[in-house]
Amino acid sequence: MTVEENLWMGGFLMNTPTHAKEAAEKVFDKYPRLAARRKHQAKVLSGGERRLLEISRALVMEPEVLLVDEPSIGLEPRFIDMVFEILHDLQHNEGKTIVMVEQNAKKGLEFADIGYVLVSGEVAIAGEGDKLLKNPEVGRLFLGG
Image 1 (cartoon, rainbow, N blue to C red):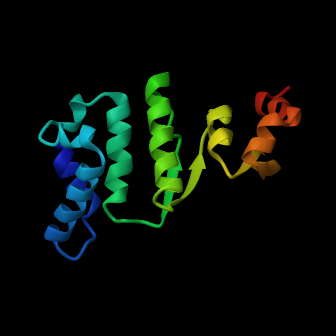
Image 2: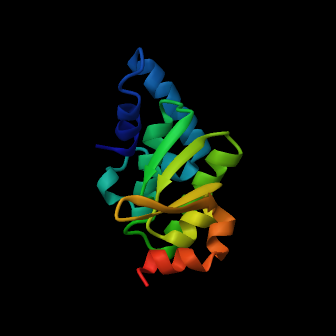
């Protein structure tokens, strides 16, 4: 499917296809990088552009809450920064609540208002993201040391 068709699919549950197309246009307005590739097959996008498309597909439904699973996985560092900048914008400028699972502890905790460190599926420690970053126990638990 093309980038545009992917966005339309994000609005599959909307009342009419016209609503989905209008919502997709709002996304294209927000992300010119996607707009420039709207007729391209999604498979030719870079890893970062694909992640942007995935997030944008969810945005078509105009959710209040985004559930984001491993946004940095498999991405080059420059694309990781881009993805977290997009998520930061959604959280701070658009008021979206973001619930994220992220194994890149540093990036995840830099982003988090509240973070949880899990060990064997159990919450081992929780707190404000910036405080957890400074807590040596987090490193010990995360690295299994």
